[in-house]
Length: 215
Image (tube, rainbow, N blue to C red; front, side, top):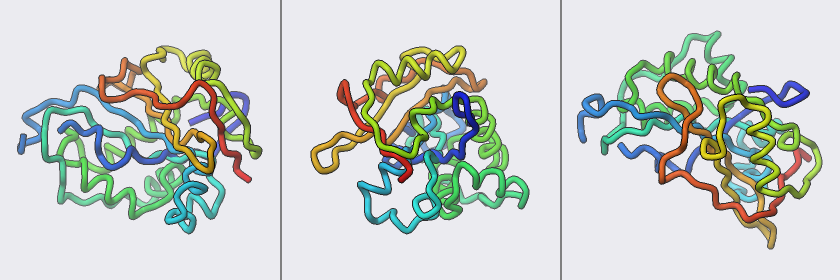
């Protein structure tokens, strides 16, 4: 994942459980239609949810982190008992965008039964997709600032070839009377190209909201 005009340290947050996994008992009988990546705005989440304040992503000042890449499938049960252990070098790379190892294991155990690959291949796909995203620098600044929804969407479309307005959606949460951006959802087809998100993925942010700075 790269930031427009500067490199960034990325970490994407989770989609309120695996709500996007529209996942029959044999998951592989239903092919994956696409994937939804959840990118979490770490400073805002750490501000709003005090239970996360001691997580590595909060303590080390991550601007963003990846919570998961969720498959769109017609199955109901996506759990997996297969190992989520990664080779040491790969684990180190993945930790740059998903710093919490326990969260990575929990993610794989929840969706591994619905993806046609092993854990190493799955997390490699996350890294490949994340590396191709150009993140607007407004999302990684140290100071808190106000932005317009249309402005932020335009920045994403300008910086990411092939992305449409229906490929990226923004989620906000209220805190002390202010609306903060907490999550970005980006939709992909099975080949890793941006695609229109399904009906269950949409923005809930008001026309104007805040991006919480790193400090």
